[in-house]
Image (cartoon, rainbow over all chains, first blue to last red; front, top):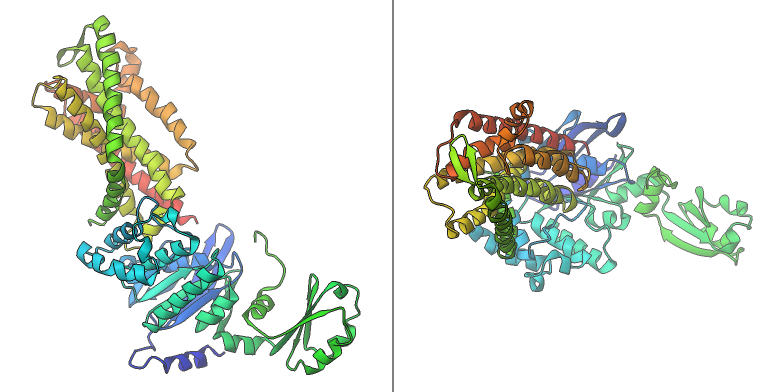
Amino acid sequence: MNSESALNAHLTHTPGVDVRKPLLECVRLEKSFGQNRVVNSVSFEIYPGECLGVIGPNGAGKTTTLKMLLGLLTPQAGQISAFGAQMPKEALFIKSRLGVVSQFDTLDPDFTCVENLLVFGRYFGLPKSELLQRIPRLLEFAALTNKAQDKPQALSGGMKRRLSLARALINDPELLILDEPTTGLDPQARHLMWERLQQLVQQGKSILLTTHFMDEAERLCDRLVVLDQGKIIAQGSPKALIAEHLEAHVVEAYGVDVAQADLAPLQTHANRVEKSGETVFFYAQDATALLHALQAYPGLRVLHRPANLEDLFLKLTGRQMREGS
Amino acid sequence: MMRFWPVFMRNFLVWRKLAIPSLLGNIAEPLMWLAAFGYGLGSLVGQIQTPSGAVAYLNFVASGYICMSAMNAASFEALYSVFSRMSVQRTWDGILNAPILLEDIVMAEMLWAAFKAVFSVSAIFAVMALMGLLEQAHVLLAWCVLLLAAVMFSAIALIFNALAKGYDFFTYYFTLFLTPMMFLSGVFFPRDQLPHWMQSVAQWLPLSLVIDVFRPLFLGQWPPSVALPLLAIVGYTTVAYALALRLTQRRFKSG
């Protein structure tokens, strides 16, 4: 529903750009490995200046979709076009205008930070003189200027990811494709990464990212595509998705009494109730009556908060662990 | 068309950092081999009859040893080092995010492994020249044959690289393929010492073809036959590269 209005809201921020024409578009992508259908009729597009998030549980088909966008896997059906060219036929042209950070670091362990950027820039056919101008700026952007002559082994996880990001920017790409850019990072490193990604969007770059972190998706992405078992099950702006699928308030009740207490009287005050382990989640449009009623249970600890993307994600994809997760 | 070049250069730059210490090994090992086999065994064996004439055993075994070294060096690089870049370090995955195709990488790795092999063998050339074992001027032609040979052995090794699940797999390649070939191809003794039926098979082994052209040139003679062995070397290389590429592409498309 709301993807259209979210997009329109976004368009007003970027005047003078032909935003109606997507940078990258994929239409009804299909991919199976043997009997296993990993991507099932997936269609979406990315517009200039936009940050699009692809979220979904492990095995939802996120990485496979990205690999098809990069021409590393060939879809059994469907079309991918970017910058007016077709993938995989014109893969080299498309990849020359993309920046990619893959899920696992692929930095060269034998090279220093500077050499990593230099060698990678050569893959794009960029001359050394041009690269030597770009590299100091990129290292500064990645907050790695004083690590310029260090090898990746000497870098922390966050520094390695930022070096990977700097490497992906070496060809000054229009569109960045980031596969779980902050997985495994500590909070400081994640926040620095977010700050840098927001900076890039402000500079007019477009970003496609996958993530497991709902706070990351909520903070960075203009629009989200929710994938589950290879299918798109929802898409739209984070706010619009929450408004569409969830009640405004969430009250979590937890503590030793949860198992014993008779919570039935509370249920009338909530639109929806879920129990997960030792915690009960009450979803309500208005939480006043519920919070009042909870005062009768002094043994319970109560957390009242607005509904967020994580609630949405869990509602859409379920709370139970997936096989292989 | 030259997209393989930056990938080749990447390997060169890594190697350059370690080239000096590895050069020492490239020189020390052949010296020990040649001393043991050439002088030690050579004094017992004396002269060896080859199709192009009689040669001292030291010269006979040195020329065979160079071909064997090129084969081993190319195979080692195209198996262990390439596998590490392809699978362990994920260097290839990074490169594939740039406008470079898998075929460019496979081509670059094949040529790189060949270059490295020929370089390490050139160190042996230098040592032998210093020892006064290189007299004639056919050496440059011999060196070119070695380059072709190194490309062929890299291409063959890349087939097994594409099939490997881990480093252990390569032990089979060395013990079941390269080592028997080393004994059947005329490195240490002329192939006419083999049973007749074995000779007719052994003459088509990749290493035999290389030795048959390389040895006479290296010793300042003309090989009795050039076109057929060279054609077979080019044929093996083409087929091996095509197969290695197909298998590598299949490996990367399956997940």
